Length: 355
Image (cartoon, rainbow, N blue to C red):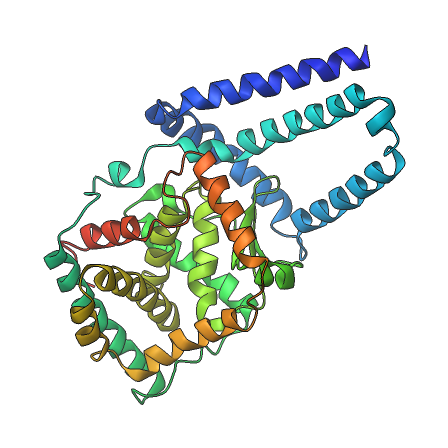
């Protein structure tokens, strides 16, 4: 009887894969009935349930799951050869349940309508538009840097603790929600991951736990990066699974925050993306534009770069490649390398708006 149940779950796993292969053809359905329907309820329920706890329930869950997996492999290692079929059924049944929970609790958002369509924005831009917008970002970023550091050669130091930054995230989303009600972020459930050191060696600034809807931020990253990284993970909680869309919404949430340090982090985050696109299109123009940026801003960029360089290791590219493949397998054809789409959203969003 138990064996039959396991077999049914394994078959159900195959059915799930088949259905998901077709779901990508119906983004409007996912947008209406899941992302703006069922998921809104699920997300808020889990954030109310786990958000108030001072520790990460998701990280604890992963720890216990890891311990159980090791124990299971040790205790049942002999079954691999003696009862291979039943051992494989155990694995298949477990994966089937986990895969179903993963999608029902969050991952159907990978199949929702592209953000540019729901915001009615163009998904492309000309080099002229890019240059004009980047010039505006440079002026705004320089102004904020000088206002905060009082000297254009000094990097900006954010004076808040990382817990205080978490508390301020909702303010930017509250301002955004006045125009886009679906971007209201309440209640919050964002925490420093207990696995911050492994995350750093893997090359990740944070992640969303899909089983508890807790946003996990790498507690070791620079405080300068904390506002935009936290806002990025909050965007995932709101149902924006694509990395590029979460980057766009995260930058907007930081920029729309009333706090000037959040604004600085958000504007310089957007500027870095635009500069990368300018470099790809015209290296000589990039060399000219970089000279217009306050040295203090470049020092903030350098601070981030040096942090990641200090943790470089041979296995980091493996994890990044794995995550990139994971994204592509989940309807994100560009994988991690989707910077131009972020810039397209930014350029077109601000086409008729003042920075």
